[in-house]
Image (cartoon, rainbow, N blue to C red; front, side, top):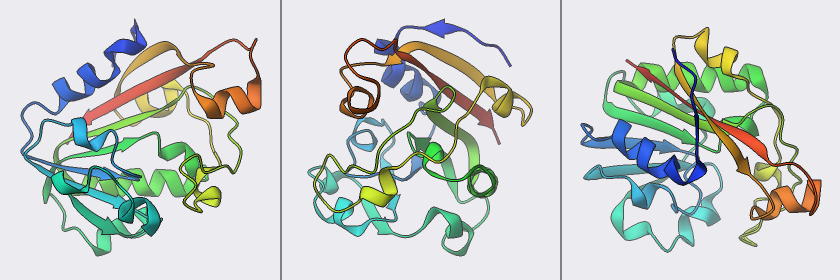
Length: 191
């Protein structure tokens, strides 16, 4: 359960290292699949509650797309049925109590690893869908996360220093041109 500060350029490299021995990955809240397409796993499953993201993805050829709510994953996937489960920029979109339950379900589904990536602390995000696909209510952030939240559940955590900045349109809209960047957390747990 170590905490390191790393450069944001290492984000995808670090996640792919954690997925290196996984044949199957389930990405909860996959959106249009931008991150999922980069994962090295031969079998990729993306789940999202907003069907238009799945329908309009440019990356749909490389993975299975399922329109389903994260809060009910245990109705769709059997325990220990997927090597790794990821929640990349998604857990903060849930109220904390709901997020803990989604995380519990992910831990039950995974045989190897659960990986979570989220802003450190509360990153206010407006109900704006930058894909123009009507997903505004899904875009609002409802919870903030700290290192200790994950460590107390047995996760390893890495802090990506100043990850969210003015290059992120959602950050720019809320915080402006001169705001200090916000750190991000990468947490993972062996199952």
